[in-house]
Image (cartoon, rainbow, N blue to C red; front, side, top):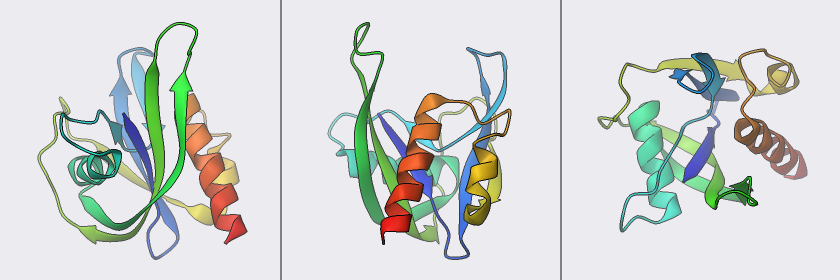
Length: 136
Protein backbone atom coordinates (compact mmCIF):
# COMPACT_ATOMS: atom_id res chain seq x y z
CA UNK A 1 0.00 0.00 0.00
CA UNK A 2 0.95 3.67 -0.25
CA UNK A 3 0.25 6.86 1.69
CA UNK A 4 0.97 10.33 0.35
CA UNK A 5 1.53 13.72 2.01
CA UNK A 6 0.42 16.23 -0.66
CA UNK A 7 1.99 19.68 -0.21
CA UNK A 8 0.72 22.55 -2.37
CA UNK A 9 2.81 25.43 -3.72
CA UNK A 10 0.93 27.65 -1.23
CA UNK A 11 2.28 25.56 1.66
CA UNK A 12 -0.88 23.64 2.49
CA UNK A 13 -1.32 19.97 3.22
CA UNK A 14 -4.24 18.32 1.45
CA UNK A 15 -6.00 15.95 3.83
CA UNK A 16 -8.96 13.64 3.37
CA UNK A 17 -11.89 13.32 5.76
CA UNK A 18 -13.55 9.94 5.27
CA UNK A 19 -15.63 7.44 7.16
CA UNK A 20 -13.56 4.77 8.93
CA UNK A 21 -15.48 1.56 9.56
CA UNK A 22 -13.06 0.49 12.32
CA UNK A 23 -13.78 3.53 14.50
CA UNK A 24 -17.32 4.09 13.16
CA UNK A 25 -16.67 7.81 12.69
CA UNK A 26 -15.12 10.25 10.24
CA UNK A 27 -11.34 10.51 10.44
CA UNK A 28 -8.93 13.07 9.03
CA UNK A 29 -5.96 11.52 7.26
CA UNK A 30 -3.81 11.40 4.15
CA UNK A 31 -4.54 9.93 0.72
CA UNK A 32 -3.76 6.23 0.70
CA UNK A 33 -4.55 2.99 -1.03
CA UNK A 34 -3.42 -0.37 -2.29
CA UNK A 35 -0.90 -0.93 -5.05
CA UNK A 36 -2.64 -2.52 -8.04
CA UNK A 37 -1.10 -5.45 -9.90
CA UNK A 38 1.67 -4.22 -12.20
CA UNK A 39 1.99 -0.82 -10.51
CA UNK A 40 5.07 0.56 -8.81
CA UNK A 41 4.55 2.29 -5.45
CA UNK A 42 5.13 5.64 -7.22
CA UNK A 43 2.43 4.89 -9.81
CA UNK A 44 0.01 3.83 -7.09
CA UNK A 45 0.73 6.99 -5.07
CA UNK A 46 0.06 9.22 -8.08
CA UNK A 47 -3.14 7.31 -8.94
CA UNK A 48 -4.43 7.51 -5.36
CA UNK A 49 -3.82 11.27 -5.33
CA UNK A 50 -5.88 11.65 -8.51
CA UNK A 51 -8.67 9.45 -7.17
CA UNK A 52 -8.88 10.92 -3.68
CA UNK A 53 -7.98 14.61 -3.99
CA UNK A 54 -8.10 15.34 -7.74
CA UNK A 55 -4.40 16.13 -8.15
CA UNK A 56 -1.39 14.37 -9.62
CA UNK A 57 2.20 15.03 -8.58
CA UNK A 58 5.19 15.96 -10.72
CA UNK A 59 7.49 15.00 -7.84
CA UNK A 60 7.08 12.10 -5.40
CA UNK A 61 9.67 11.96 -2.63
CA UNK A 62 9.91 8.57 -0.90
CA UNK A 63 9.99 8.90 2.90
CA UNK A 64 10.03 5.37 4.32
CA UNK A 65 8.49 1.94 4.02
CA UNK A 66 6.62 1.11 7.22
CA UNK A 67 5.02 -2.07 8.54
CA UNK A 68 1.94 -2.09 10.73
CA UNK A 69 2.07 -4.71 13.51
CA UNK A 70 4.74 -6.99 11.96
CA UNK A 71 4.24 -9.60 14.69
CA UNK A 72 0.70 -10.21 13.42
CA UNK A 73 0.70 -9.59 9.65
CA UNK A 74 2.83 -8.14 6.88
CA UNK A 75 0.95 -4.99 5.95
CA UNK A 76 3.59 -2.84 4.23
CA UNK A 77 3.08 0.78 3.24
CA UNK A 78 5.38 3.15 1.37
CA UNK A 79 5.12 6.79 2.46
CA UNK A 80 5.70 9.69 0.04
CA UNK A 81 5.69 13.47 -0.08
CA UNK A 82 3.89 14.76 -3.19
CA UNK A 83 5.07 18.09 -4.60
CA UNK A 84 4.44 20.11 -7.77
CA UNK A 85 0.77 19.17 -7.81
CA UNK A 86 -1.41 19.61 -10.90
CA UNK A 87 -5.17 19.10 -11.26
CA UNK A 88 -6.23 15.70 -12.61
CA UNK A 89 -9.15 13.61 -11.37
CA UNK A 90 -9.64 9.84 -11.67
CA UNK A 91 -12.68 7.89 -10.55
CA UNK A 92 -11.99 6.20 -7.20
CA UNK A 93 -13.57 3.28 -5.39
CA UNK A 94 -14.74 5.13 -2.27
CA UNK A 95 -18.38 4.52 -1.30
CA UNK A 96 -19.05 8.26 -0.88
CA UNK A 97 -17.36 11.50 -1.98
CA UNK A 98 -14.33 12.40 0.12
CA UNK A 99 -14.07 15.75 1.87
CA UNK A 100 -10.75 17.48 1.04
CA UNK A 101 -9.33 19.62 3.85
CA UNK A 102 -6.54 22.18 3.31
CA UNK A 103 -4.31 22.50 6.36
CA UNK A 104 -1.45 25.04 6.51
CA UNK A 105 1.88 23.25 6.74
CA UNK A 106 2.97 26.00 9.14
CA UNK A 107 0.31 24.71 11.56
CA UNK A 108 1.23 21.03 11.28
CA UNK A 109 2.02 20.81 15.00
CA UNK A 110 -1.64 21.67 15.71
CA UNK A 111 -2.74 18.90 13.37
CA UNK A 112 -0.87 16.40 15.54
CA UNK A 113 -3.19 17.27 18.44
CA UNK A 114 -6.42 17.31 16.37
CA UNK A 115 -8.89 14.72 17.69
CA UNK A 116 -9.80 13.43 14.20
CA UNK A 117 -6.16 13.03 13.07
CA UNK A 118 -5.20 9.89 14.98
CA UNK A 119 -4.15 7.20 12.50
CA UNK A 120 -0.61 6.12 13.36
CA UNK A 121 0.47 5.88 9.70
CA UNK A 122 -0.75 9.42 8.98
CA UNK A 123 1.05 10.76 12.04
CA UNK A 124 4.23 8.94 11.03
CA UNK A 125 4.03 10.28 7.47
CA UNK A 126 3.46 13.84 8.71
CA UNK A 127 6.37 13.71 11.17
CA UNK A 128 8.73 12.29 8.51
CA UNK A 129 7.56 14.99 6.09
CA UNK A 130 8.25 17.76 8.62
CA UNK A 131 11.70 16.34 9.28
CA UNK A 132 12.43 16.03 5.56
CA UNK A 133 11.25 19.56 4.75
CA UNK A 134 13.20 21.04 7.67
CA UNK A 135 16.38 19.36 6.40
CA UNK A 136 16.03 20.97 2.94
